[in-house]
Image 1: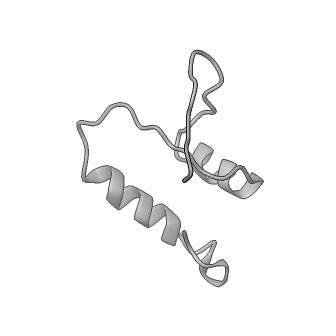
Image 2: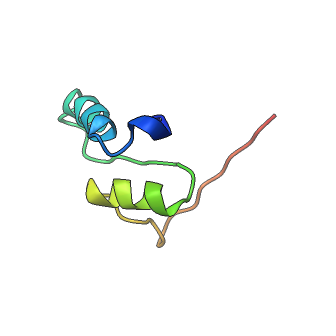
Length: 62
């Protein structure tokens, strides 16, 4: 996560690109994150689409 005062400077995109470039052979990328307009726009700009069909997720917080 990028601190609010540093957003809109390309830092998040740079971090994302560095991470993804380390794993060029990974075809399936699954992301679980908070649902905010800002977060949605960021990941959609990276080519992610909302998974709404044929998927189910589980979580357990102890």
